[in-house]
Image 1 (cartoon, helix red, strand yellow):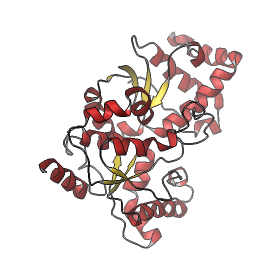
Image 2 (image 1 turned 45 degrees about the vertical axis):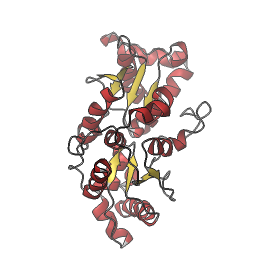
Image 3 (image 1 turned 30 degrees about the vertical axis):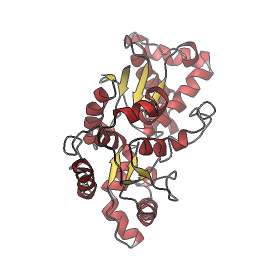
Length: 302
């Protein structure tokens, strides 16, 4: 399957282990990724608050670049914040032809133009959605060479991939808010239920109210620990920043020890597909992943 690939800003900056692990996982899933290395930031919801036409032009530019990739069936991203922001822009672009013409006029100098989604077979999907809807759980299971049996993994969706449901295609795919559990199970691990799985990680307010932001993150992590999780997994690198990078600080705000690893989705998939933790960048996390690595090694030995 050939895809236009938009890794997003964070995966190429703060969390390069996410970008690297996705590049290793892709060929094992028979995915050919054509990286859009000249594409631009999605705006992460921030630019839209100040200039809607600008953010829609930026995202239309990325969409138009993706639509020009010969042979690609769609565009894939590895950031659920990108998915949310891009879906919002796409909703506006698809709803109003006159507005779409105005936005496309901003792209004319680059000979780019976004085509309405309904008029093409083209789509934009987060890696999580692609795993379930395009690859399929049965095929994913068939690719597993190192089942993650005995590993208890807590899913963390964050905000932008679960709401608003209308914008994110839940009418056609009503179980998208359960896909992480499906994938965890398909890889042989045990999904862990806990209260914070679909709540905000707190990252959007980290610069405005650090205490509230880190208290949110700390509570979700504590809930996952209390539910018996060995680690968490998230499809959002911004959630990863608050749950992993900020975890030592978050522990102070909830007044308890945390120390629970947080994996990127491609890292979890890569482990089950036989890739080694170091190659997946699991030594680059703030919260050490050694306990997860040890369990995986024990499973492989068994």
